[in-house]
Image (tube, rainbow, N blue to C red; front, side, top):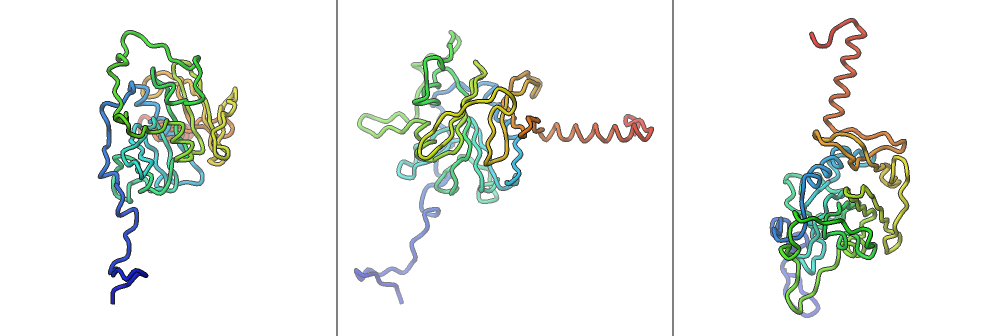
Length: 276
């Protein structure tokens, strides 16, 4: 017998869940080619180092997701509104979308979890968007004649006349997503800034002189500036560390360390590892 409401409207099926009815990453654009920004080699390599050195005691690799330069959709009432963080970490989500697919974008209303950390790398002409009300004239990055003219930098989210304007990055991370940790780094000045969500608003936190420069107590991990070579290129690079300032290793570095330890054991046994 069909279920009948108080208004005697027959209803034979239960309402479908929002996860079934709202847009998914398969329905939304993966990129907007006209968006402003000046991608460079740093924007490619630095996120890799953050992902490859991330070690969390309480979250297995298959129970978290790190994304870089990926559309982040945040408002179900405006499904095309998005931001594109340089790097972010989401916890308590499967590494693969629905456990089986690579992500084309990150759709918060489908994932069920907002990011815990967002990191933005300052580029010329993006400082004000990245810093919002925390921006000062001293944060402006000097431009040069080789940069793309400002008039040629479009914005795929710029509304038509009379349309509602999307909120700024800081407003999205602070008010819509309530991201606990928002970090902004300028490789031009080697300045790292940390904004922590306290109550309903971000408050800028002091940066330590030593390593770690920032300690995230809830995640038991620190962040600092590492002077070294990554993919053959010199630093400084943002890199995760433990509470004592010991740098966390990439997968490649871990393999090299194990190989060196094995070689040392063989030498102690009087065996030349190069002949094995």
